[in-house]
Length: 170
Image (cartoon, rainbow, N blue to C red; front, side, top):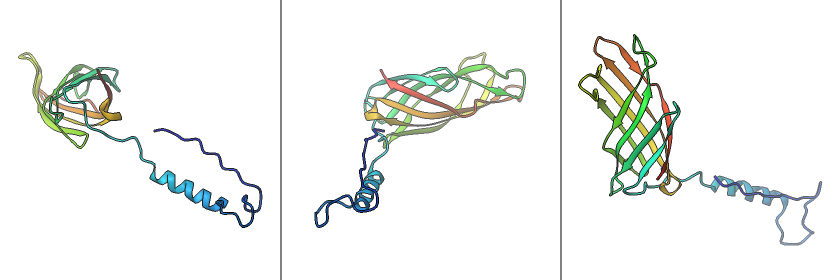
């Protein structure tokens, strides 16, 4: 968000403008300034760059990467690694987190997807992955959060907790 420097000058007590002039009184100036601030837009969300690749990091210190479809309507091949809090022996271990075909609507992408183990030897029996993000700064940046909850063979459960991320177009 850009900040504009505004200097308000007024004399103590009376109106700073000469009597009879068409200048703004201090009160009108302050009200105009407050109205302008109310109309100032926050950082605008925007569409992703079609066909672009994004790379960044998560709040867990891991890399995150994903591509946007050529149409700009889907996030594809989102990939990162997450560290999990588990109820048993797998506590504190990291694992792959992959989501595909995440719809983009009005600069926002979000999805809930069923997760499965990524290899034949995986101990993951099922899970749920969620993500919500927004493209910002004319599509050059994406920010958001993700979470993974897993059920492992043997009944153990694991949760990544809410993990935030920021990624830049490459």
